[in-house]
Length: 164
Image 1 (tube, rainbow, N blue to C red):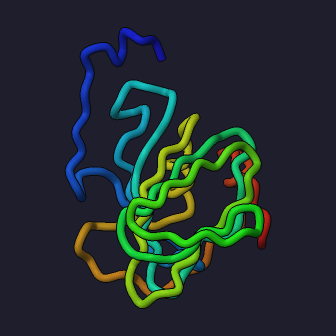
Image 2 (cartoon, rainbow, N blue to C red; image 1 turned 120 degrees about the vertical axis):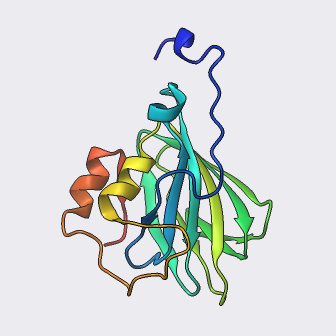
């Protein structure tokens, strides 16, 4: 989008103020996109939070056409980057370039919350496509499977599924 669309434009999204989607196994938590082109008028990135439920994980994948920044916001776990384990604690920051395989693992009994920024945007669409609408504060649904066409959804949105 043109710079004139964002000059003087600001967006503030409070917790629970944006869309939220329950996520299928193996993450079993929820994704909460906060800033994305349709509310920022900026087509360069999107940002949000992903909550990984206790004893769950985000399966290994990469992004062929996107770079991703991840910051551990709350909880503890580990991130596998190209097969190497790194501890996650609040404040841990990750830069994941094109085609970098990564997986986030929560081995604790508490939620793990990651802040993500992706460029170009699109992760917010992925969470919507594979998830179920969530209302803040509601109980988590029983674990549910990913859509059968998840690989096609990933390909359409620039992701590379490396583990079925």
